[in-house]
Structures are given as structure tokens and as C-alpha cells.
Length: 231
Image (cartoon, rainbow, N blue to C red; front, side):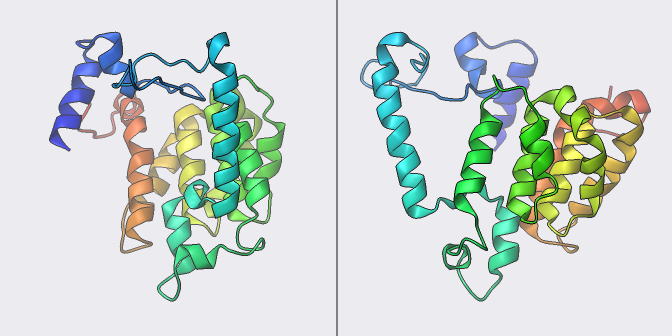
């Protein structure tokens, strides 16, 4: 949206205060707000000792709800639509354990979001998992750990450029493009450009590819590759 672009540009230019730019910064693992006194959700209470009991209660409630409904939010949209197709709803398509190993996915996704856990081993192992959603979260877990994570799984991430799932291919290219060696950047960009064509896969996959491309724009300029953000 036009207003979001203005907001983003102001944040990048350093023209916002801490509360205004919070949206564009890395988010904490958990957020907890007291909405009566803080309706704009500015003061995160998740790490304050006096609110741990409430945090634990709400965390368990959220986890139980996710399990009860087999929350599809852990599945990238392109993968949801690729599997469900036009014959059934995503809800029906992912009801079985074979289609969606929920507990394994939930555990890996939870590990991925715990930034204090620097061990890349579970995510590297997941890159060879037979299920694409597990491979997807393996990639994200490594990407969230930055250069060290991507380096730990680098060779297996390159293999995923040929994965059967567009979401896995895109995530792998995005991770290496962001945190891998510059020698891999052109291959990452080529994959993302190819996947960004909705006639070759799907509109959701194209959006995932474009989202992967955007953070790489700053890395294009030193290579003298055309980019609208290059000076």
C-alpha cells in the first residue's frame, strides 16, 4: 500500500522514533501487551518477570488451539495451494499425518523462532526430510541464524534449488542470497526471477519469490546489476 511504502522509506531514512520504526525491525519471539493501558501495543511485557504467569497461560492456550485446528499457518501459501489444487480445500487436503505431520512441523517451527538456540543441526537435518514442509522450516531455521546457519547447511541448500516444492526452492535461494557467499548470488537471483513468473508456477509462488528478491536489492549494486534501488 502507498502509505506502507512511505512508512518504510521514513524508517530506512532514520526519520522515525523507536515506536514508529518498530514494525520494520526484527520482532521478538513473543509479544505480550496490556491493551487497556497500551492500546497501540508499544510496550512488550513478554520478558518482564511479573508477567510470566500470564505469558505461560496464553502460550499454552495458543499451542493447544494450533493443535486442535491443525493450524495451516506453518505451510507457505504456494505449498498449500499446490497440494490442495482445485479439487479440495486446503483444510481437507492437510487433515492426514502423511499430508501434514503437524507435531513435527510445529516443533521445528518453534525451534526456528527461538533465536537463543544457535545450534543449526536440527535444521540441517530437516533439509533432507521427505516432507516439503519440514524441508521448508529447515531452510527458515538456518536463514534465521544468519551467515553461520546458512554456512552450516550450504551444500544441502544448493541441492534444494531443484526441490519439487516451489516454496522450498524459493526459501533456499533467499537464504543463500541473503547470507551465503557472493559467488552464489547470481544463481539465487536467476532462480528467484524464474519463480517470480506466475505463468511458470502460481501467483502465490511468484509472490514468495518477489519477497525473497526484495532483501537482496542492496547486494545487487556492488555487482552492477540493474536495480531500481541502486544509486
